[in-house]
Image 1 (spheres, rainbow, N blue to C red):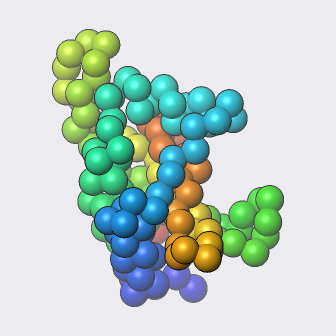
Image 2: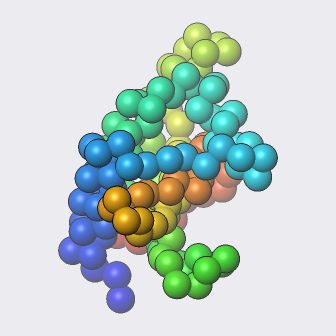
Length: 128
């Protein structure tokens, strides 16, 4: 059972990773949506970190086992952000889908953001 306290602990870990520059957003060929989103809204690494750090427990959607490893938990959040579309030059409210996992390394914890893009479908919140 997921509780508010568990999600808040996950967010503290995410904030710490962002504050210590221990996060990456997947931008390989399988994560083209992330790349397009970051470029379209001109999201610098600092802006990406601030977006993640603005998450609160009510933005939580669900958690699930990592399909590849099954021994890690993937956390999924959704949040509305006001972002400037560089193509149109207009600010717009963007429903954003954020999915991440924590990886343990010798140097500490690393947050790998698997998905960081405009939501493709309706986001269902766990606490709302």
